[in-house]
Length: 209
Image (cartoon, rainbow, N blue to C red):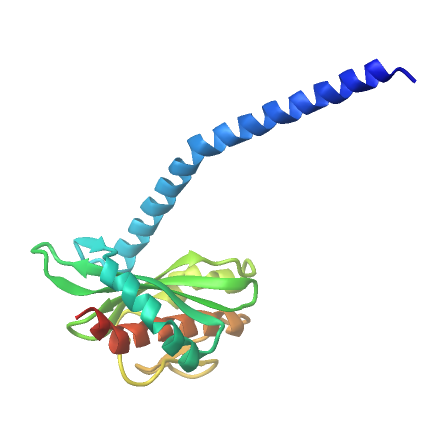
């Protein structure tokens, strides 16, 4: 066995691995800020969709503090599978706070975690809209949560008091949500995340005041 050849081949392999590693690292350094920027832009688009009356949004430090302080309360109220992940203040064109954007997650989805972004009007205590940050449900079933037939149920729902309930049949009232046919689990995951967002807005926002 030629030991010099083995050593040479091992050295070449090592060099190739190092070069590949540096190349991957450099690619990550270049693409990571771009990916973060794209995600931020997508999030801002979602925020505008769920709170169209707002002119701007701000993730101020007191909102992060409110989310952190409320974690145990949210868990005790809704269980460990429901979380409020972040929140932003929504401002009108004059710089007045008119509501919140609350990002919440339910791990009860059929395909895993369902993360929503909910607009909450603090003056009228109504939901202004619901958008999706993460949704990996079954095509043709749970993915219909993104469609207007389901999403359009949420604007105008009361943001305070009793929790929203998912129903399979009948006509939904102000505190009910009509489930997607064949995707009740997804419907409940979305609604439970929204309930946590509403609860945060109604019960925990005083932490920032």
